[in-house]
Length: 322
Image (tube, rainbow, N blue to C red; front, side, top):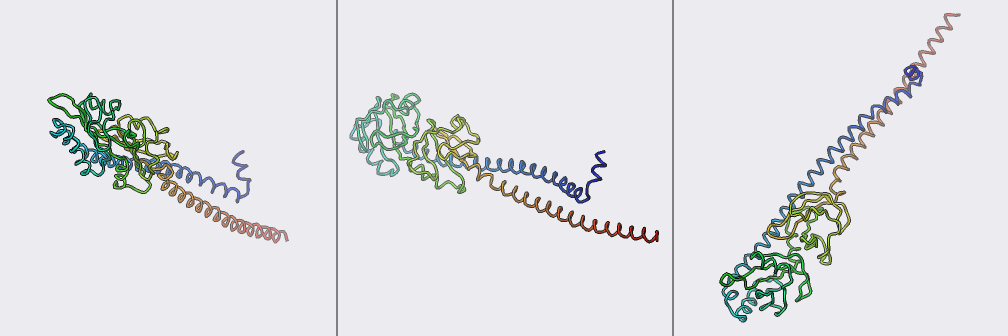
């Protein structure tokens, strides 16, 4: 019955239906291609972000290592280990002028009180985490973003402990403005769409490409906690600064409590996919319209031919009767 009802329908209707049915494979192919392009683009963007995060971490790590080497040399100097306070102060002044990126340089005693410094003496840092870490581990320590008690401005402190006859006697600390880290990111090769950010383990922003200084110190309120796990990886997150979805990669900076995050806006990352899908959809639509036009044209010709045959048959029938 269904076959008969189908055959009873007008020829044009059946041709149109057949054309529309042929569009189904095009739609299926389009969906499959979209999923394939989406996955390929996602992997490509993630891989690019991983490379960017590693490169940024290498840049920052080299920057830290350069300052550490200088501070370790200072901590081993006789003026620091055995000198009197005037000797220490003279060394401080010489080194500050030799290191223009250091906002301050100071030396503490074993209790954490500054006994020689470029800006001010007598201030205690005994409650600072980096001082406790240096005291407990005997190793150099890099702080997260802090507010200086001497200047009131954001700083990063790098502390190196010094010893006299094997006994802890204090730390040598360099205070550095995070603007210098911000400048490093301008030297990291990246695309204009890539955002590179440096976060501390306390989830405070230390530096970020393209961000004003007012953003520094902002607490992350939307980042994935895996970013601060001490491991590298990838994720899709919503930025706590711009609130845009980002495709990111994160990489810890060796020897520091920091992590580099490199990301691209989700929408920007998928632009090539959307473009390809749009082109495919337009081409499919053109093919479908062409097929409908051809069906309409064919139907008209077939109908005309059938009409001629029917008229001829009627004329033949009349003639035979006559």
